[in-house]
Structures are given as C-alpha cells and as structure tokens.
Picture (cartoon, one colour):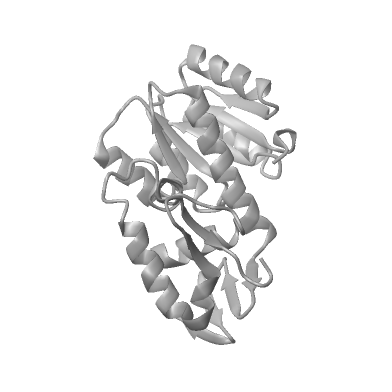
Length: 230
C-alpha cells in the first residue's frame, strides 16, 4: 500500500496530540489535514470530499462532539472513520460502532498500533471502493448490497459470515491467524473466545458447499483462502 496516495484528516481539540499525529503520519508518508473541533472537521471534509480517505475523529471535542460529527457524515458518506477518545468504556465503543465507526482506539495509545489500524482500515475500505464485486470460482460477493451468490444462487449469510468471507477473499493466499481475523471482523476490543473464528469458518464452509474447500486450515497458524481465481 502506497501511503502517499492517502490523505488522513486528524480532528482533535488537543493541539499537542493533533500535532504529534500530524507529524507522525506525515513521517510515514501520508498526506494530512487537521481540524481543531467538530464543526471545522465537517467544513474541512465537505471542502475536500474527494481527497480525504480516512478520518481520525476525537470523541470529546467542544461544540459538536465526535459522535455528532460521525452521525452527520454517515448521512452522506462512507469515508472510513477511526474514533479516538480518552475514554475506555464499552458504552462509548458500542455507540461509536452503532454510529458507523470503522474502528476505535483509546488514549493513551501506541502510535505504531494506531498506524496498524489505519493501514488495516484503509486496506479493507479501498478494496471495497475499487471492487464492488469480488468473485472466485462459483463465489460472487456483492459488497455494496452485502449479498453472496454461489453458482448464481443467492446464499443467506449473517453479517459476520459475510464480513469474514470478504476478509478472506480480499487477502487471498495469505495465512491469517485467529487474532488477525478477530481484529478485522470483531474489532480490536473483542475479548471473547478466539475459537469463535473456528465456529464461523465451519458455518461458512457448510454454506459454500464444495467451494468451502477454498478456505484452508493451516494448522498452528490460522486460515488461508486459496480458490482457483484468488
């Protein structure tokens, strides 16, 4: 992934944190814009709709907070948003995801962890933007409508099954550990049993019938998607 192709907006009322993020992200090749409050974040986004690829959005800002900004953005755009906050409470995390956040990180955070999350979100969302349909053999995923067809026949998947299959198919022939899959599909704050991945893989394989063999188990490491057109 070429970072210089992506522009990130940093919206945070704390000048020191904002400057640290701007400097750090520019140092890793990203183009960066910044806003000091919610209203300015919206104004900046609307003025640069076709340029901004991801928003780091602080929750606790004066005037319009991050949740309000995100709700307004989601009325008109699916631009990826990572919520940034000093709070570390489940309620705030759930509220962020319900409002349409793509990921969530709490202060204080490691810049390297934040960078990894940014790269993960951009990778997933850029694939979705470039490929509204992902196909492999008899499997056809319609990303916008979240529909899957197998040999032309619609197959009903749960949201998590669809997201899991999308993640596997857009990372072909790459061994993905259970933790990687949990981080991508259940988000980084998931604290349940990693074996839930195995359960969802089993369900997916059953629904994919013979094509379920495309999802290979790599013992001791995780799972790999290896189809005829992957």
